Length: 210
Image (cartoon, rainbow, N blue to C red):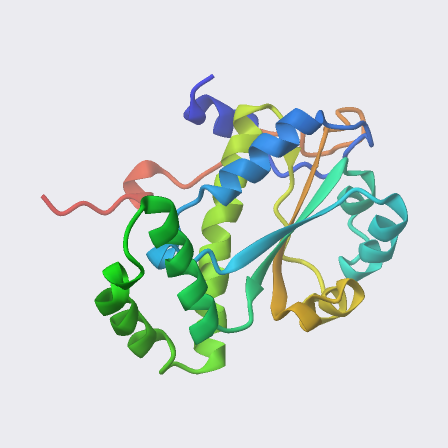
């Protein structure tokens, strides 16, 4: 199945049936998010995976009781760094240099330029930047799920600070950005399953300069 076919197949499932998704498929979806491009390779976000049913039930009211949270097989939470730090940037480049067989000083000039730009911004600006990087991984995870015919429902409708407190993310320097329940559609109970996918006409969507 091509990516376009997969994206035509997928939709934002409104009702899941509670059946498990094969762990091998979940691992591939997480791997896709892990391989997503990020600015300067900094990867300023984490993916949290929740399969514990009791914990999903605690998260449900934080997500305005959307049933997919409870009925999902795996609940993925994308959480972005609250801020960038000099130590964090150093650690990323040390790992890059080591794995590429480069001297530690090989990226000093670029790293200094990057720090000058990033560390001069406010924490809010840096969190917003990190959140945008998380969304890149989020989108790629959705695409991989579609290719594997795993249903996924993108969610922004939740109380971020409450979720962060519940999971202790605030103590890890993280803020939750999006939720992605993975599961299997309940075709008998989902009002959206048989409705046509609708997007704006291409001539309205696309702007070309030739």
